[in-house]
Image (tube, rainbow, N blue to C red; front, side, top):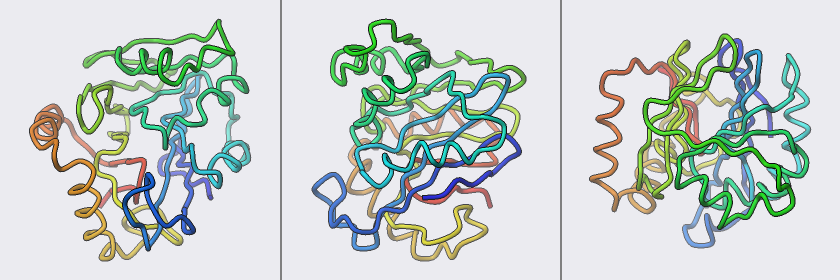
Length: 237
């Protein structure tokens, strides 16, 4: 697991999982898989998505946060997607960070409360519902939100840093395969990942074709310079 900066104030907390035979207990991953979270620093800090439910990632999350320049106080936890491989660690994370405010769609907030039950051990947990068009001011840095339901769960959204045109997409644009060094597409040989991306999409997201097309339309007028998925490389070039 390593922490890599992709802009002066956005860092990737990255873990390669190589020793698990199956993804979500079902899909073979002979080449492993990558888990990514993202840390956005402003006057307040936001952690975008968790790398959870995989012990390698959970055990190293705090260590990697400690390597980020500028302090690691987490004011907001933005949850674009609440599938257990990203939120299995959420109840423990909330206990460790009781002052954090969780940001998610209305359906995402309902999952936090009723499915993951993250507030059971932290009754004062702050939870903020957002919808398409809403923004979050981090103090000099702003995140904008886009709901993309059923890509591939109903609570899913994307978050956009409007200054660097960096889009945090959750599982969208993800792929199988550990990276084995490097993270940006310009730093690695992308050739092995095209088939892994097709395999990831066809198995996990492909049956939601109409919601995928609706999601892409929401981004049609946006400048996008970095695509930051929770699985796979950061796409820039």
